[in-house]
Length: 503
Image (cartoon, rainbow, N blue to C red):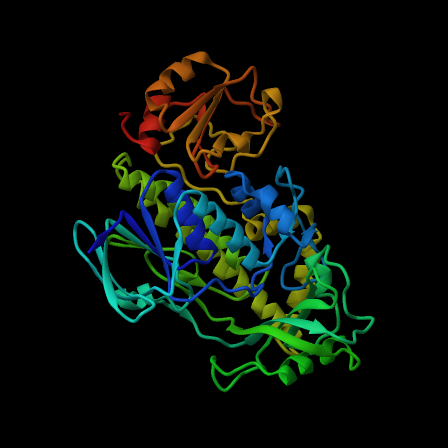
């Protein structure tokens, strides 16, 4: 029987980033995927601003930019005509990065390889037993034989039809599909005046005529005539989810929205999806953790799915590593569920609301609501609020044990990537996967010294924040501020709460 510390099932963006985070921390990790090789379909197409920041925290964003096809300044909510803007969230890069999911997986797999870990393709999980000390996984290898793996923990990152979730018998409550869609990589021969040639605003891609109750969009990729075709509605119901996608289906959707002269010459990849909305009740089941689509599925609206999974992985990675390495404080691993479950629940909520707007047919009540909501979106406060929810920039975690007098505005929120002394950006300090203490007081540096193996203390002449200042900020490895000074609780308590007892 082979032994490791963590088994990650699934090599999509969630599984790859989680495995890379574990490997960065020095955890022995095995990554399994039942597919014979990595898929090349574009699938998801963009990194929300917060997800781009997450990759930047590990020095991966420049690589993502090199592989990107666009930078997208505006998002959308339910294809309403007022775009969402990100410039109210103190983001260094207030835009989406347009990049196919396959390229995100490629760069994450390269990072994982740099840590000496390869994805084991063609390895299918077929059995799972856990006990008080670990998990035993039965794996079918490419030649058909079955082998066993023993690990302290197992992470389910194997998608909406998760094998791990089914083997555990975990319920997946939610709402059934009412709308059915197709996402396809296509090559157009003839086009029309309605076909976009550039992608700078996602809102504008949806600003064309479409049948009531149906949404269709063409997103330009980076080869001439190469597009992603996205279409969904209650009337696109296939005989089964596994039914092959025909070129005729795609051309029908294309011509209804983009004109009779538009023509598809090649269908490279095509996948069916629905607006089913589900979430597991617990993200931790004993020694098994669920992340990404294995934990939650929802309508593809506002480009949130891949981003939600990547941010799950970033939240879980450093906590699981601390647990495996024996330095996690009590309750740290359970905080993964406590923090991420509400975030996904909000995404399910906003995507269901978007579906109501997008798929309702002739309904005077919904039309009136759509008009009112469009007016509300034009208000800066409303636009900022929804942009923060959909982009992830507005996520704020409750920081238990961080008893600060009047709470600093950053407590529980993401640390903005501000420029510090000597032309160093705050995000660059997190490349190693350790926590960071920024302070103007050398006494705090001295106090943090026993945790120097897991927290880097940086003494600055000032912390250049707009608004309320701070004498010190303690930042977790995932970029969230977990303690500020001045505060009622002392720094040593905060360090112990989040980083454990010093060695």
